[in-house]
Amino acid sequence: MKYKLIVSVVPHDKGELITKAATDAGSTGGTVLMGRGISGNSFVTALGLGETSQDVVYILTDYEQKENISKSIKKAVENEKHNFGEIFTVNTNIFLKNGNVAEGENKMAEEKSLELITVILNKGYADDAMAAARKAGAGGGTVINARGTAKESDAKFFGMQIVPEKEMLLIVVESDKKNNVLNEIKTLPCLAEPGSGIAFCSEVEDFALLGKSHNE
Image (cartoon, rainbow, N blue to C red):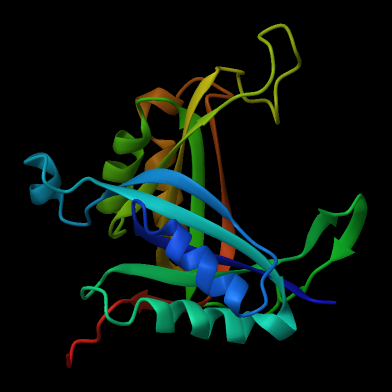
């Protein structure tokens, strides 16, 4: 069976609206994370007006249900303000389900127009990473507060230093900008020390803005 991860980014306290719409369409549930948005406009962000509290909703579903769930979410927020949020799908190759390894859909050979860049780094540096990404043509992003789960005496996770407080930065960019964005982020002084951060990319499908259309 093929699996997909549906990701929705909406204003804070609207995550439950998304999960209800998903369950109404047959989803078994989802995970709501709290984050903060960083505006794509660096001038607005400099004025302190660009940051907003956001809910990031993860819904894992099989391929057959994906379309109905996505439609249900879009329908539930169609009367919300223009650019209320965004929704996209990430291909899931392998994940654990009920203690077993489940295979997803492998589409690595297919060219994608959008990529999700995920950067995990020590707390306080996500804004620096976003500023570097903008230099390479990225728009805005979403920051999620996170924490490490290992003790300082434990082995490093993928060679990354274990520091309790983390930030996870999510940026959706055009595929042809991906390498430039990653290269800009790698030049940050906060990442000069080996193991001070990690980044990875995921294929994005079916990207759409949520809320009222331009014509309404």
